[in-house]
Length: 105
Image 1 (cartoon, rainbow, N blue to C red):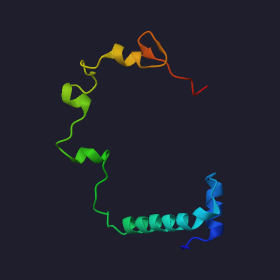
Image 2 (cartoon, rainbow, N blue to C red):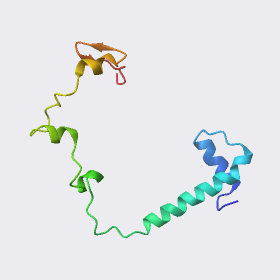
Image 3 (spheres, rainbow, N blue to C red):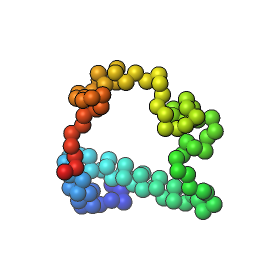
């Protein structure tokens, strides 16, 4: 097997609420070991002098975002978007708005 014991793999599967057949234990152990090896490789990279980004694509100058490229103001929607066509795809609408289930009481 790998560096993971059978007990560790079973406990991990139980915590993740996964049914894990005995035949898959060895394969799962190897996959988990390779993931941890990759994590070790990533942690070994020196990132002390790297400035954090708000978004990974902002570093590329050739990428623009839909709102900013069509309007001098970023908060004006694209006039080419057909609102009525988009609303027809929604399961429920009211007064030109999408209706969604209430998730916070």
